[in-house]
Image (cartoon, rainbow over all chains, first blue to last red):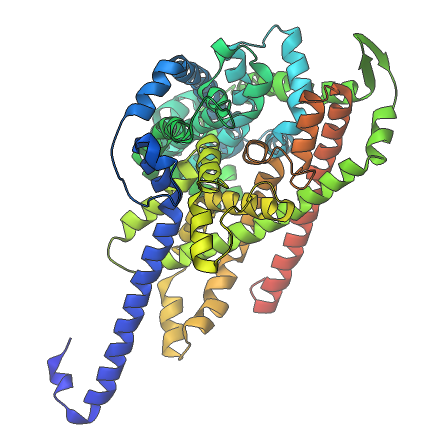
Length: 293
Length: 312
């Protein structure tokens, strides 16, 4: 750093020692970080390796840590032997329904929570929190009975509606904290310029809360893409399975090999992981806006 | 701060947009109707189903018979116990992993942004691929973890991770810990970055070491965030179904049968919807009670802490 200091002999030993300690600390820091990354990412790595490994190498013991060969056969055989493609399309349909309903309902909900004071606003907030608390398994039976009366079983649209019912409250809270972060002066300026309440919501609040809206969309998409519980109760026809439900039937299935199982998992993960990496900035900002206060 | 925001805004809106006093009803109606139809009504219906019994297609009102059965059912109480052991384990595991990762990635080093992004990936991996990957990694015949264990500890490599009762619980906690830690890490990290640097500089001038700085600055500043996260960890793990169901199905025996699993199996394996609905009501009450206890204890702890620090 500063050679002038080092040239003073009296201090040089001390400084050398301090430097060495600093260096050890830095090395330890990098070793720790790399170690944590390796452990944290190993399952993902293992899924990728297994998906592209030739059949024989997946089923050998001890398993090899690295790619021994490279093949797409697991993935191509999956699409050929199983109706995976149509299941994935179903998952997209269900997710689209969930995302649209959630965003459409969460915007007014968040506006109510963040910017309006009315009689019963506390009760409204509590209702939304309470819904959030609800464990899905506790309510799946009555929910199923209710949708049977509505003829909503084996129906992808109905499944999307159920997911939306459970992701809307969380959406409201996420978006509320985004709306809270918009300074009052800007909103008031909208009023001064002659906007109505809805006008400021549309022209001021929503454009300034883009991260929040993206976070709500991603959360709704994840909720519907990831679900197994409601799908397994609501969809009994194999032809109408969602991707998650269909792939779950591969687990413990003797027809599906371990390497195909991994490949199915990989295919199922690609979209959420890509979406996450793509929108990470928004998600983190949107989700932590509330927690930061 | 929030309260002040609202007030100043309401006054502006009342001056600006006349006749908007009913606006909240228009905004409220769709969401209330939707949530009422698909969340609130099913809860009510669940209570009604719990008070009935359907046998061979005929449904009768049976009063509290299903609840009586629940109170006398040793499997129900065993699953309640498992649920609380599980939620407690997850609170500890998630908070400590999250705190560790947050502290580590809060240090300055090259490629910090990349590392933060990479460490968040497990959170984005959906439940079913997580289950698949862990089943393959923990496979008693071909699993890599058996290999690692046999090399490191010299044990027989046919370890039945998911089918030995004590191991199954630990395996599930580890799997969930892996999947959930990034969320906790991210929230703690953002809370860490809001601690002002001059506090640390002042402490260093006063000669405080790393541990002392953590104990006197970092940790107290994180307490509100940590207590919120503890509640979230409780809720997340109480709700957890897929990761347990698809790996062990509640087994071996009842070892990993949480309330969610027991209810699901009662409904969809033994087809006793009425009893499952009754336990659903019971579970909901337990979740509410757990949350209330949590919130009360947290408030106490935080208040005590602030009083102690003289910040109240």
